Image (cartoon, rainbow, N blue to C red; front, side, top):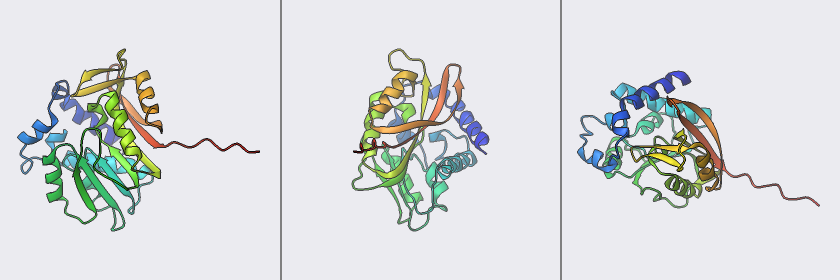
Length: 238
């Protein structure tokens, strides 16, 4: 199942390579899209079936980490609801889902399509989330860090830290390669230097470890990281 999901991601991203290499305008792409006719290709998949399969794969990643029907889930960069749809029949009435996106068209689309009292959608900023006083069990970044520069990743993770429960987990994927200046590429596809990436993560104050990885192209890996609240050092004993 895991290998099938990774293969689907690789195929989807392979079709996106042309526009990933451009400094694309995410908001402009949504303004041009006809989401009533096609809400899947805006986030990569060639078909609705592939869109749904990738959503189930994302859900399985969270289930493997302990997701339960009563969990609180924050989906940053929710797009048109790939993970949202997969959680509709999984989260129970005690669960809570919040999806955020910087494109108002994506937020509006999801609000209309997923009209449930415990499913909420909000427009966010690049590195700031419009949420206060919440403790999420899971925060999911799907293809978000792949379009952010190191400082933006750091700032966004710092903001998420205040919304993460004591036992909460953050999941996010990045492109990793060798980039002497810290990163390479542009907004369409940001490749993070291996050494610089770890320093960026340390600046967030979160603990982190790689979860899965696979080759994107020669010299570049796509790596899924898991973040948790830092474990405080044990108090000295007398």
